[in-house]
Length: 544
Image 1 (cartoon, rainbow, N blue to C red):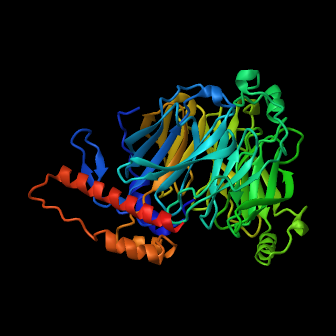
Image 2: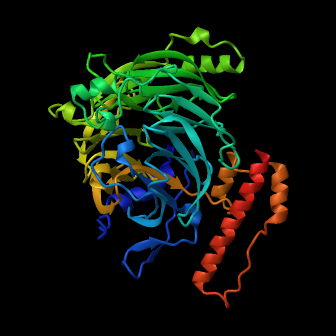
Image 3: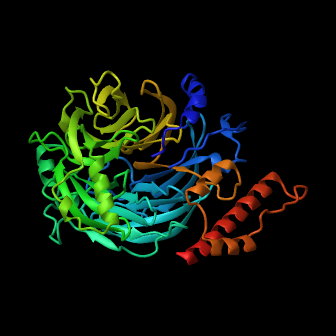
């Protein structure tokens, strides 16, 4: 999640939030954004100048292609191609740059993760019959994708990906069989360096009790009593999020058992260790909660869990001292058994994500996230077809409001059905919503003061969109100050490789403008950049 940067908000808030958004006919470090605009002679739309590619952000959108292989039941259209890349414009419009992923080969990609430091995106397939696949793509500035690897996910219906803070391991969660797996990564290139090196199976090899949908099982999109009974007969891990403070505790919402599981994560060995504790994901009212995701506040010792089945957000305080104690014990090589039965979470609030009179059986929650400013929490409601927005209490009113707890701002229609996912742009001022069952994505402005959203009029037709991933592009060849900041956090090659690269790749490419048209020049520059990227990737791979 992009941290709050007041410099970005200061110069953007007036121009974006007080002017009308364009309406189109088509139905962790921040950098300041200086947009240069030109005029499109075909559409009349203001567009960015592409001379500064490192300022652009792309959106990687995935779709469902085979509904029979899913635990739930989408109502939109099957996608013939499951991967799309869009360029984001300053007025909130999107330009389609690339379509890829034949639906019969990249089946049901449904969760994506952009590398925190590299132009690499990972996406995983959702299939309850066969093990999921995790694909790694290098993302180019023109939106094209180069596959740089794929691995078996070690389980079925893969639904979540996490990269650890050392960026040497990718952790995958498999919803259907609830398994957790760790896969090694090359830190320099982001490529997979091997198959699964660690796996955790909460069922301990036992067969699934529930049947697949096409074999007489229930549709996991429903929320009636009979469906819930079948959904919760087996464990169903839905996410794995590492604590943002020490990176040594993995929190796993188990939708099938109404639990938050706390594991020790061995950062050095890259494996899921012992299970410290389990605790209820809500108020323990006797009714199902179905925890789906967990997110952390960027400044407060607070975590938020969205409960899919009860349409609630559970707010937890975090025991930072316990996390520090676990981290120290890890560094000292001490046994972890002494931490069993101790939880770093304590429930302090539960709040509904839909109006109190709205039937809970007609809604299931989708995504939750904390806004990068730390001032709002956002949840999508599938059934109520809304985005629920909550203000985070800052705790400044003489201690009356517990810091980090939530107060309702309002509910905002998503202009479509089943908002499975949404994503903010880097500035936090635009919200892109994937309306799965109406085959659309819609763009909204986000008011940084009130937390309210407003439809921009920008809507795009995509078959069964299920995930929107923001890909802020990193320019590895620029010498500007912004890229120097990226180098400080490790975006470099080992010294031996650096010497080879420096002697092999020219520092510039000379083109005679008198003999080339502007399109020829742009094409040659893009080709040269791709060749450089490929050579660096190959050289860096040798060092992994």
